[in-house]
Image 1: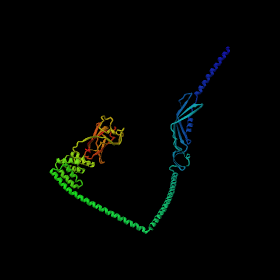
Image 2: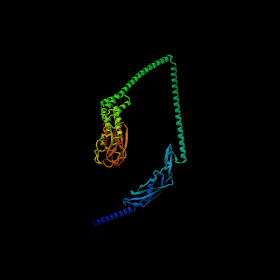
Image 3: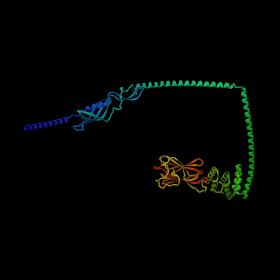
Image 4: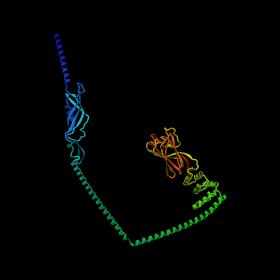
Length: 519
């Protein structure tokens, strides 16, 4: 039993000793693993290059093992000098199986590839991976033999000959196309000539048929034409006779009216001198002369205007009440140079004329004669309708209607356009035509932006008033006097400059001063 035990102890000792020797040997073998040579980088890089590039020289740094003894990771930084094996070219153009090329690299030229190589050890072999930082061989062209068909060098005599061949081909094709076009035009002209000849033959045939008509038919047509002319002549003579009789009657009536006018003028003069003719009788007398000559009517009006102020005022009242438009026009025309009645009275009388054109014309004449100071109290009118606008921000155009209501420069309630740097406008009306004296533009933000006003008159004409807008207070008001304008106005357009500031230019309200056309 003791001997067996000793045997077991000896065997265990030998096993332990053998194991130690085995593992020490393996460690020495792992420690002695040789690093790969630079040739492994050359082989991998050559496989990356196109077949017509060769490696000339490879420079690499000392390899560095960034792994460990069990899993080594060896890395190099390298610079590879490469060169094409033959001259390289790139395609300039290709047509009709011919390619024009331009040289890009000579066979004796070189370039450098930069990169990092990494090697790992697996299954008894070193595996290499390349990280190329540039690929200068890309887009450098290819050898001439790689192009299909005929290859011509750019700028060579072959290219000149190729161009000449192409020009000759184009010229030949052009000649053929022109010859075909001429042949088609010739055929068209021949067809046109044949058509014209056929039409001419038809016309000749018709002419022969007309020339061969029966002579009696022509005589009958002539006789009928003579009868028609006789009938037309008789009708014309009868018309002239009737017109002559009517003209004679008109002249007779005119003479009778002139005689009556002379008699009426005498009666009017006597009535004025004796102060016995009532105003209504005087108006009636003047009205009865409406169809007579203007010279005699002016003579009567001159006599009326020579009366004193009391009778003249009574005449105005009667004329405004019962007189026709022509009489009111004549009285005011004479009164414009008279001192017995004020411009205010004349303006009021003119406002009662029924004919709109006459009424406006005389009101304008009174204002012009008095330099716009007719003594009539001006009224104020807020804009009541938006007729047009260039643009608006959030449907803000109606904000200009009615009285001003913006109290804060940053507050809402103004019309503004969303654009900056563009000319904008808004057009408003005041409910009726007005004789204007002033316009106020109430500004809510970005003050000082009004450039000019456009005034549209009742007759359709327009006047532009330039504005020097120096408004600084916000909110503020720009007042524009309307001087020397004696026509009734139907609308006012306010033009703005949105490049005036970086803020939205806002109009709170527009107010007009003046008096309405209807008094």
